Image 1 (cartoon, helix red, strand yellow):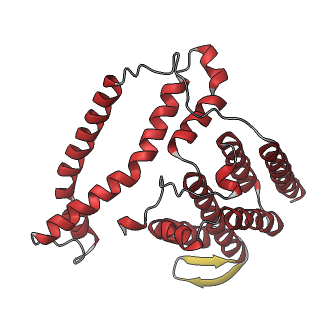
Image 2 (cartoon, rainbow, N blue to C red):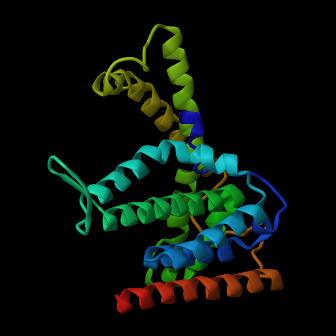
Image 3 (tube, rainbow, N blue to C red):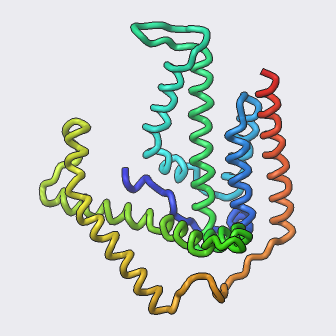
Length: 270
């Protein structure tokens, strides 16, 4: 299960999505999330789903990689859908005991599950096709106007990138600790939910010790390289918007803005 968590991993490639400017990809992700949160009927969901499918196809990211990353989120998605089914008022379809399944509840459950799936897939696509360093540079550039009001933009972008970068490392270390404890007779797979949760407690001490040790090593390495924030820092690779970036960004934002407007129009017409 731990190996299925792929958030924060970067898969190098030469596709159009990989070559896009990371600033453009961040703007597209924000526009995609906005359109997704304002979608409220089948047509808007269909357009967003087709756009996401096109992005996955162009990026050449294997759908199996996305599906593998979805497995740890399956319980949350299913639980959210079940709550929407039973707690949405409307025309009753089935009633038993204290529960009532309504047509509106089934519709909302389907749309909510699709929304979560597409939201997670969009986030995965950003990390799959953008290196952590490029993502940090893009965040710093987009948030640079905030530096005029003394917001530590560079430090904020660096912290986010380091946290994202170390997710796969911590997951890998957790898997190694679990394998070592299984070899010594530990059991993480039998018993009820509370017993399994209790069996995971011995993992916390070595995991936290390893995380703090790695953080200390990183801090020492940054100090040895005279790192002191973003002041006067240069970059080996400069971010430059090309014509292709501008074309993709303009077309995608226009499409997603249209979907968002259509969603709001549908909300007002109800």
